[in-house]
Amino acid sequence: MVQTLQTSVVTPATQCNYITIVQRKFQDVESSQSITLAPLTVSDLERALGEKISRCDLWRKNWRNRIYFVQFASGELAVAKQVVRGDDAMVQCQYDQLRALAALGIPGLHLPRALALIVPKRTVIMEFVPGPTLRELSRHDDSTDELVAVCELCGQILARIHLAWTQEIAPMPVEVLARDLAAAPWHLSSREKAILNSSLETLAQANVSVGQVCYDYQSKNLLYNKGELTLIDPPDALWQGIHLWDYSRFRGGLRRMLWRIYLRQPLQRHRHARLRETLSAFKRGYIESFNKQHPEPAYFAAATRLLELQHTGMSMAMNQGKLNLARRLKSGRPILAATKTSLATLPLLELEKRWLFRQLACELP
Image (cartoon, rainbow, N blue to C red; front, side, top):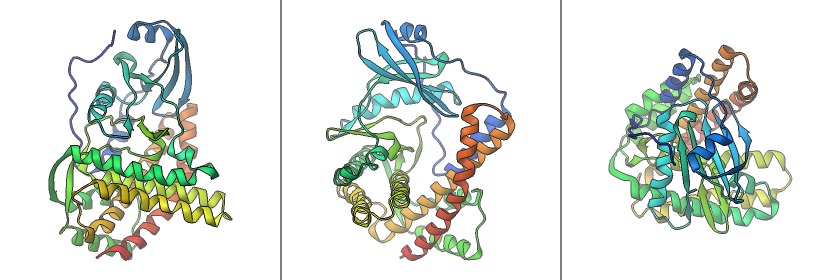
């Protein structure tokens, strides 16, 4: 028997103010009382699924989620995701979006089958899907050619999702973006401020595709197996915004992934050159599948880079929020791990911010 909410009402996020939303979420967490969510148990699973469970092992965890590996008595496998910091609406939305995305029928895209929802434990149970993530695939020297083809497929699939979700073609909301970028926890030089102002003024002339966005379409959330991609982390809210946000977020994450490979394997120049083709393959797959390009080619590069910059600002806000939360809680292994990661990540994000501003200056039409 599937335990579910009677209604699924999720308020869409305000368009494009992702930095502000992250900051508000951390403020809400810091101001709320600490409530410990009990771990998932075998009896929880058996009541929800109506089947005998032989194993339920904690597989992975961080400060937000616990991921369990589940084995049925029949031998079938499943994964249970428990949202430690969140609310009932988030898990209900993820459960619904697994079905909604699967219903689009996009070739090459697989969604894990939703098996059950346990609201009191804020847990979504879905089928287990084998295969490496794109991030894991990139670590193998013999998979470089395959990774290029997979990134092109990622672009094609994202474009088809956006085509299905397009609500309108509208002017780029530069005023909303300006306010959101101003909220980022960074310091801008006078030159960076000038580049940002010039970018916003230029991109006010661009039209963009607007509608529901995936929000977290990234290499770590995509599995690849036998020519098919599986999205393992569906949206936890009905995010609304510029579709180019999803494109920019994947591209920025792919670029960071390549940077890590360059640092770890600095002498493999030939492989580096081949890996750089993943960026152009992703763009090619996206543009060729999105039959009407928005924004138009003259503004595409600058708009992409500006939204990559917004994602960097959002990452800064998220890592700063983790540090503030750790100072308040002062305990817990997941919180401690998040603190160490944030302390190491913030200086790197500052370097990325400076690089993005230099690129943005070069790409303005």
